[in-house]
Picture 1 (tube, helix red, strand yellow):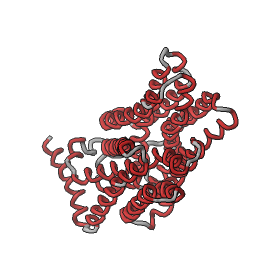
Picture 2 (cartoon, rainbow, N blue to C red; picture 1 turned 45 degrees about the vertical axis):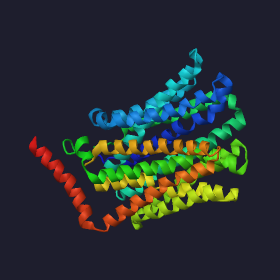
Picture 3 (tube, rainbow, N blue to C red; picture 1 turned 90 degrees about the vertical axis):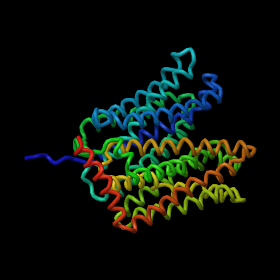
Picture 4 (tube, one colour; picture 1 turned 180 degrees about the vertical axis):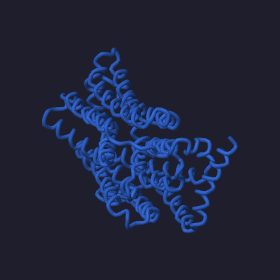
Length: 416
């Protein structure tokens, strides 16, 4: 008798995978001032840490489009967990072994950034390949675990430092590193299916010739910008607007934003069977524009904080929602499609916050002006979704888009 595969174990492993990514992205920034005091690293040099992290992720996104299918999902995803754990553990060792501590820190960052990039590329297609019903809801719920991971890292680390002291940060780092190490064992034994059968997925060249794919790339860039811009500037904005301490700023800013984003993804995960994805994303896009305007234009600081926090609720389903739409519109896209979507999201997450910083600096370090300029991202996202909604109303056109991509693929195969 054939033993039935336990895909819930796969889903659990993917949940913890996104928690691992949240640890990689959110823990080290909490230690920036500690690195400055312990190793004497200037803030200008410390700024290299997030740059290195996101640049490494971008490179992994590009590379994964070519090598992930060849190496295999299982080996790559196990490697993502091992590298994430190794990078966190290296953070406690390498700075003390190098004559220049920053070099050791950056090596550790590269290691866990490679792991984080692989997580971003692989987990969505792994879940998409599982025979679950209500894929939209499961995808949204999956991505909510990044949010809960971020909340857990910020609250857990804050509590640990309050009880045991910031000087014991290495112990906490080792504890966080145990999560991906444990999860590697989950990925060794859980069932993992192929997203597209061998020989039936579109090549990168074929994928790039599908107009609908470029629409998804545009939406993903806007989604990444809308999410990361508010998230990364939430703490500084809260501190400057409300004149509170950094501790309160971290809890009221990025932590609250991440919590609302997680709530949005969980709610859609539970209710997706009753909701139209494009309509829901379109409404959330309008809401995101309102939140950005409220945060940047409100004369009362508390209204600015409300706009900042509720923006997490507005942008929550944009990233996983775009992935689900892409799977519908281009079902033969394969791993390359998910890799390019991750690349587009990371590109948006890099450009958006950088633009806010430049505009704010030009306006006399006024973050409100920076966030007002960044409203262009949710506006573009909403316009793109409105166009997609109008096109989706013409069922023949949307079906034609899919058929065109599949016909193009079939003709290319025939020529060979």
